[in-house]
Image (cartoon, rainbow, N blue to C red; front, side, top):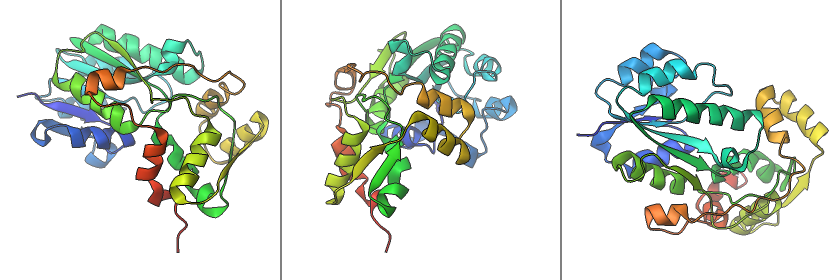
Length: 265
């Protein structure tokens, strides 16, 4: 019987993935279950009896990754959640880190699949407080991308984890259409039945605010590295080809998660 270790099991993608895998085959790995990728000893115990691993890297550098992949890759299939920015050649710190992880996975695992996901729809949850309080979402105007639903990422990951069909492939996962931040905010407003708007913030002001909010400097610089780039034109049919279902739109995601953006009473 295949035993699948799911790292990031309580995160947005991990939760969806666990719902789509046979419960008897899954071993969740997260801080809530006592797992810590920065502590190889906790990983070593979790890998006992496991032959397949879904890997989400939660750190902003690849410094600890060689030791982790040495453990994870021993005779195992590894499915790694990377970024479509690697394929597009974006050289910001986050995409450089993903590229390093991809190389380590490919070198260490018995077999591997790389899932290069575009912007994940669940990132919009970070706007909930602004939507509830003012109806205006303020932030840097990052270029439009084909935002992908986390459930669609999980569907492709589930196939890669339970079948050898996708071994050795680097798959780019996108939603069905390129959508800007303003269009995402408008879609949330449609789901709520309220008029919302996106208000761009200059990169310098956004940097100061994000740092003041406690975001790591490497993450802030990676986010701001995209400001000023033209909208992405990258759209793939991979989700439908692998899962048999058309990729979900951001509007569908907003309708499903509308209660998270409602004003508290």
